Length: 370
Image 1 (cartoon, rainbow, N blue to C red):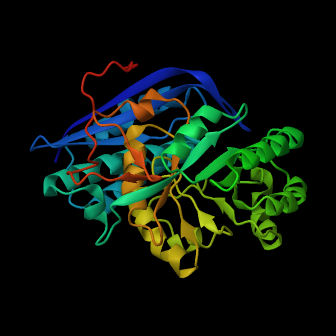
Image 2: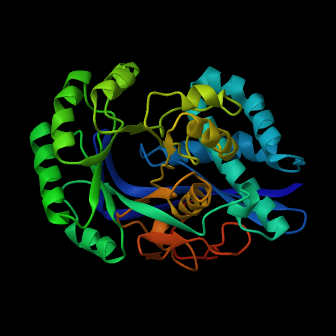
């Protein structure tokens, strides 16, 4: 039984803005849901609100107005069924208001919190609740890199064994190519590079980039096409020697046909389980992707709770587990837990403790808006 349901909005300013092709983040936000059961166990969930700046306040308003009253006092017999029932209860209002995306992002936080609660009730880590076999360590790749390139942060991650760095493109061709060549030259044979255009290229522009990327030994090209040309991703992939990746912006309603989702024309599927794909749909997606020879690499660029959850989910993926790691300064990502994440040999070890395994700092100094 859900005895308590609360939401908080944390916000911190950042000195170095995070630039993307779709906009600039000058602050970082965390919308944190906390659920408690009748035994006093608690579980936390993060709902994606990176951009735009007002997203977090809208999400908090939705929780306070509708989702928290729904959750309080509810019995949870099975988490996937509970989430599907909750989705059905709010689907009509979400369609009426054009907010299906925010609804799924809220459901992601609810499911994450319920899964941590379930793991704590059984006194096991989340990954052991979800998988029969899971990796103890998960490799991370460095993400969020934009111009001017943060060489000190890159050096710091190289020293900790990180061997894959992802550069943001999609600004203008001249600067993009300059930044990419500089990063490749700097890394040399110490690490490889992937790129992310953040859905800002036309199809023709992407075609022109393909030989450049192939010549620079790029590991993958992420979200190359603008939304209006996204239907041509398969066509682009058939022309490319560089694997095409994506998935964070594929909206997966709870209970969707996972064969269809796994059949997206992508070599690497990157669902985000704080944003558009709930955890149990992710668990259904992994075997469907495996049947098609497609790799699943969780997307993540948020705060500490979602990072921890993504590590647990990546631990059950086929092959070498890999998950995204934001190298930008963000106290909500690096200073939110009593025990910080530790990267060693390019990997993070998942604690053998109940739930997420990283305890929150209670009464921390990070400013809460609520």
